[in-house]
Image 1 (tube, rainbow, N blue to C red):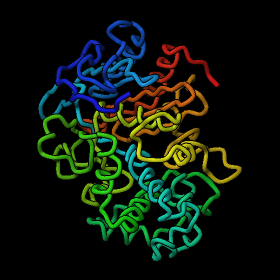
Image 2: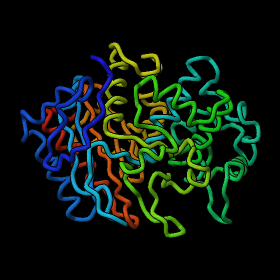
Image 3: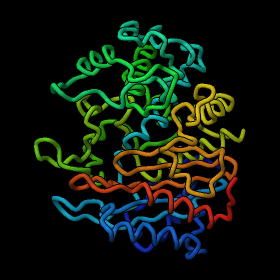
Image 4: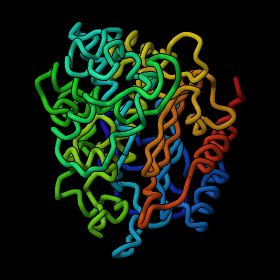
Length: 391
């Protein structure tokens, strides 16, 4: 089916209704005809909002090229002003930037023969070899087995890309590279630098030209425009007491002026649908605008971690690691996905040709609470509603 999609209505679908306007990926939504099918998952999200786990949420389910359910609940903003959540809200996607943009960019360049995922990072960034990092490969970065610490130190305070690069090059592995799983933003900040080095483009420009535009993701990108500001879900107050809205929440990406391999993507439900459905179609060998070959995408979304390791990771995507709770209890063992610290998640199941996403700004207005259990329970409820059984 066509991957083009009409712009989402700004109407708030507070009672769990879905879009029935436009054409393409969001057309043919079945929720209006089966209003109770996803009622359990809707109820879980409504309860989480009442419990203060997040101010609001936009969430959806798709299968076989159709959006089955799309709903918005609660508030987009609580501070400084109250705003109702709408299905066209723009979210800070946080770490979903890693698989959706950075890892995909790396695989595109690998597909063109411009880099080798099994090569040492130092082949492309020579200064990276310092402090015991000479043997760290792109594969180890992509799967979070580099041994590097979770994030760059923030003290003494620093700002600017040069400050980040200096700290990356001098960073020291916490454990022997390849010996264990440590989820690290440094891995993907480094990968973003490699994309820029090889392509000659800043990561945001590369992503727009080679990922977002081919997919028709017109509502997504780094450094959102002023015209989107009114639809952006604010996150939390920054160090100066200013509410972050349209400025990336992640402190390291913010210090890097909003463009980094670990965070910085802003997107909407509409564009997440485009991405997920194009990915599933390409992976299944169907006509698709997904900007990667089927074989490369299969490699990207199947286990690629070092041999003998229990945490299963694809290139950018989580499969079965300590962070894989958004799979729930009944999505297949071949499924994969990722989360974002701000409250976003996407889980994709190629065996059952379906996906579920939850977009929240759970950190708003003052840091928020965990929605780890919510993601798990919603995915489980969705799986049951789809008639899935665990495998």
